Image 1 (tube, rainbow, N blue to C red):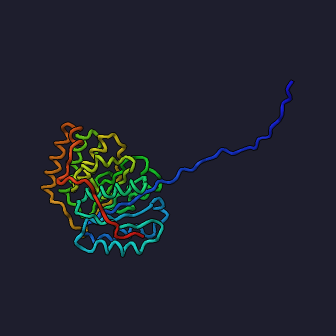
Image 2: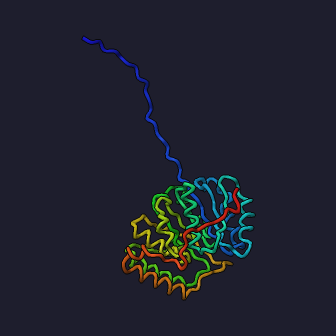
Image 3: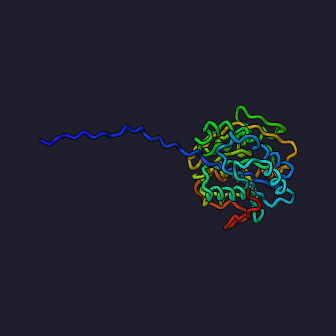
Length: 285
């Protein structure tokens, strides 16, 4: 009979592999906002622990005719070195939508997990998204969008007429998209980078209607889209929006989307189609 041999095996604790925290890139679109960009960048000062997930802050200047780039450089110099600070200057005036495309491609190429959009005109405040970043709630969805009209939001210097118009359009977009919409595009939004299909997104408008098409497309693709309340202020900002023409353009866009959705998203919505959206690095630290 074969003799059994006892084998001593060391007791091993089960290995727990900790997940790496998500890498977030902050994108600040900037155009003619030399007076406000300092305040926007200053929002990151003294919040190192709260912003531990931030890998880099990237200002994308859309060829501002003022000293926006100089102001951004001076503001960056006052921040600690716990994240990278980059300024890109577009090689042409691409519009707000075009600057988004520059930032999205940069985020993909840099291996970022999320893209946090914070407009450079100081109308929104990064503090509104901080609790959601720290708790991890912001990372549970594909699009975590700041809303000026969500319950708990706060608007400063925003007229009742504009509020009424936005609420009406939110209702129209909700009806067409078949999902609840409480803001068509604020200045504080978080996107999961892996869900950004740039082949499609680069055909979206380069102007201020980019966010509207982006929202409709995200919902059409059945992405997880959630809204959270934000504070919003209009103090010394310089608006590039002509309200009547903008409202008509958005209405026309919505009518086209209400038709064949496949045809709508397969089309090119740009006034000037481009093969590339190039930018130059003018500051990195």
